[in-house]
Every structure is written in C-alpha cells, then in structure tokens.
Image 1 (cartoon, helix red, strand yellow):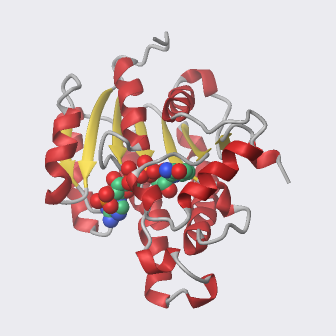
Image 2 (tube, helix red, strand yellow):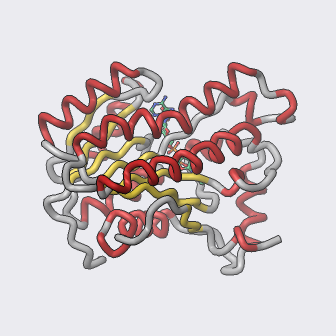
Length: 256
Ligand code: NAP
C-alpha cells in the first residue's frame, strides 16, 4: 500500500469509537507500516467495539481511559510502559461537547458545557502528552485532530470551535517545549467526515454538502487521506515539521 516502514515503533491511539472513527483509519495505516499500537477506550460501553477492532491487528494492547480521569490516564500509561516499554507516537482524536451546546446560539453556551468541551477536547492533549513524554525516549510525534471552526465562525459548531482554537494553540505551545526532546507536535485540520462525533453537530449534513461545493477539489475528503497525512507526520519524512496545522480538507480553508 505505502512504503513507509515504521517497524519497531509504538503508538497510542486515543479516540476509536467504531470502524468509522478517524482514529481507526489512522490506526490501520500505522499498523500496516509496522507500528505496534495501544488503544484506549472511554468506558465499558465501548470496550467490546474497540477490542473487536484492535484484535484485527497484530499484538495490539487495549486499555481503559476516560480522559476526564487523571488516575485512569496514569494507569493507562503504567500499562503501556510495562507492555510496550517506550512510545513513539501519540494520536489524540478525542472531542466532546454536550449536545445542547452544539444547538442554538453560542451566546447561550452554559458555563459547565463550555468547561466540559474544553476539558475533553483541548486539555486532554496536555494531560496525555505529559505522561507520553517520559516514554518518548527516542523522540516522537504527537498528533491532534482539529477543524477549521477554530479560525472561522461556523453556525452551530459553537463551543467546539473555541475548543479547537485552544487545541491548536496547545499544539504550538507543546511543540515549542518538546522540540528540544526531539518530539514533534502537529495538528491535522480535517474536512467534514461522517462519524459518530460529527452526527452530534446539528446541521452536519449541510456543512458536509457546502464543503463539497466550495472546496477547490470539489469533493469531500476520505478518512484515508487523513490517515496518510498522519503516517507522513509520524514518519521521518516530516522531520522538519512541528507546531503546524496541516489542512486535509480538499482546499476548503483557502476559500472565502
Ligand atoms: P468519533 O469516532 O466519534 O471519535 C471521537 C472520540 O472521542 C470517540 O472515541 C469518543 O468516545 C472520544 N471521547 C469523547 N469523550 C471522551 C472522553 N472523556 N475520554 C475518552 N475519549 C472520549 O469521531 P471522529 O469524527 O473520528 O473524531 C475524532 C477527532 O476528529 C475529534 O477530535 C474531532 O473533533 C476531529 N474532527 C472530526 C471531523 C469530522 O468531520 N468527523 C472533522 C475535523 C476534525 P465516545 O464515543 O465514548 O464519546
């Protein structure tokens, strides 16, 4: 398929909910390149699904982790340390906002919904990176998934746009601090893809349609295009890139 060889490398994938998840597309392509992967699942409701997917790959490990719980993050990394020894890649593909916050006006955003959205969707990158760094003894690559609503006003994307702006800034700040350790930190800004998280956004289908019409490539993107970019950003082919947001959106972001 692709000839990037990452055998001997290890990665943690956070954010597989089902076979449509962007994280799963990334996991498959990294596994194909030879990466041994650890997968986290948020709770028991999702365990069977994540386990069934992960078991399709060689030697994957599966660990629980709700990113809202510090002790679960700590326990997850203890298990990764014991079973993988070290870590080369961290893929952060997690986002959440309460449904009401993604409907109606941004002006009506409740304090608790704002805090929860930023905690799950932005702070979690810091919490996960903090424990990943000591395991990245030979440098590493950290990736987060973002969306253009971090830069623009998008109807009903509401507080998730705020969360993505914070996430992208965290990527830059972490890139600055971790560069001396040989750890690169980047974001992929993806065009709309039909997933579980996307379904929570009211009017997602019209966003999806508008994207296809406006994007220079006149189409939506495929999850595999996000995954190949992730593979590139994990590999040495991108060794000079850190602190960047790479758009995989058929060019939509350049349009007025
Ligand atoms: P997805 O399959 O629903 O993945 C989102 C993941 O976040 C799920 O596995 C979800 O688990 C997890 N999550 C939420 N709260 C969590 C928590 N407290 N602890 C641990 N995990 C938690 O949707 P996706 O579209 O692939 O989303 C992946 C990333 O891509 C997100 O950052 C999203 O914003 C970004 N993105 C998506 C699009 C798009 O159009 N789909 C475009 C640009 C960027 P649960 O199912 O249990 O909540």
